[in-house]
Length: 168
Image (cartoon, rainbow, N blue to C red; front, side, top):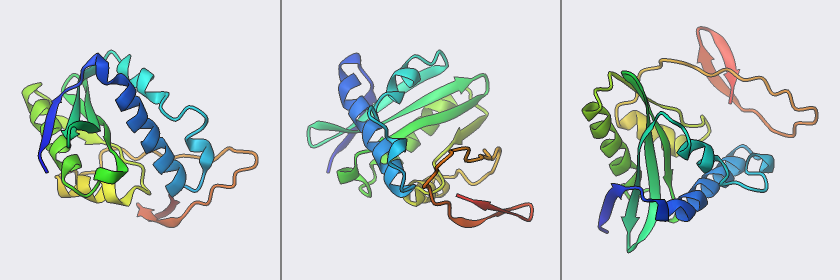
């Protein structure tokens, strides 16, 4: 399968919004919490597109259609690959790897010194891909408290940092 990575165009907005919604629904499924996707799962795309630190966004095309997107947020010599979204039907075909490698190459061209990526911990497939692609240093850990009054979310044990047990 031929995969083409190209710059995002405004005409790709609806497709990328749909991809973002698909990712939100995937997160809702792996966290067993439908509220994560909400009633407008693609809404986060607008905030991302309006981020003044967004330097680049790319789409991946396969079989004549957009099947993935990724972007780069740059803040001085630090940057974050955000998002990396591959449609469910195209996962495991090397598209995410191509997008990440493209983002790394572009980050180098922007003069980035530290490049990060923040997958949700339960997205094991994405997590393993990013580690395989060289993201093996822990720079920051985001700690959360679940303040929901009636949370049905089930947190899994399994991560130990500095001797402290964390759930994910």
